[in-house]
Length: 69
Image: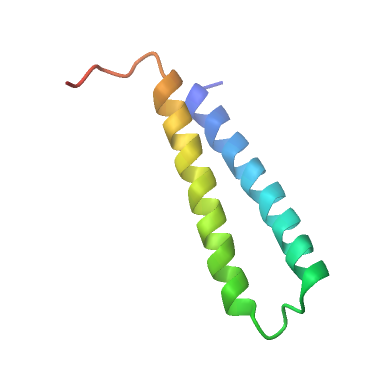
């Protein structure tokens, strides 16, 4: 299988798990019915950070990356 596909699927899987845990933690501590907008913004920030980390990890470990200096 292609290395890019493996990184993409792994990143999506981590995003789903992290989002689920974040929702459970927020729901257990406060009522999210009134502040659903804040939860959506928090999820967007979390998934953006995970996506950027996955992209940088892929670029760092990719052997076909050309040196651009």
